[in-house]
Length: 318
Image (cartoon, rainbow, N blue to C red; front, side, top):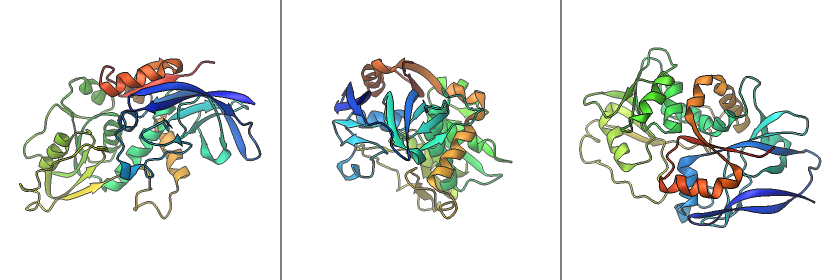
């Protein structure tokens, strides 16, 4: 029986590469040799640090996860690989150098999307679903607070809607260059009186969500795209929240947005996300790369902040 190597979170704050048996592909299955995987920094560092709330252990399971929270657990969902016939595919699979899955659990990567960029597919799918949940429409005044990968992708998609007035807000000055490369107007802090129709919060911090509430206009929607894990989130709901009749709404990629659910399934949504990655400008979101064997150290450095990154890509040996 063939062998595969996979990254496991052994316990909170510690990971290792483990060897495991790989069953040959049977009828209706495909064997994938991984080329790249991407680290979904927000969720995966919470998993690595053991900060998934017990109430969410079942909800937060990803496809092909092994083990359970807080560990040992094999977790991840941004894998790009090659089939035996040479086709490049994307799969929601943990970090592993070779794997076998049902054929309908891989999606073809379009010819105009390089394999190295396709690691952004899960993040793009999250951004697309958030855009649907937000109800953003042509002509709206929109603020996106927090310009990590998901926030930047939401703002990138929003900027291409006709008539949009948009600002992306992040106190990290390094985000300005990335935002401008994607055609996103940038501000380092919130502007008083912005009076937004829709505010999307994606900073992952309680302070960022408070900022988002302050930017919303009368009867506006504030869409919470961050997942805070076990971190308590105090909110200033005693200020203008009620007088402005604000709507605070969550978004999560685990279900297709209600506005599209009657016609869209997961495969169609993921195919669309992959097709949206054809723009070479999106390469600016991948600002680091490590080899697979270094993944335990890489994940630890991302989790404790020693390695700041937007999307960190993992390269697998030939």
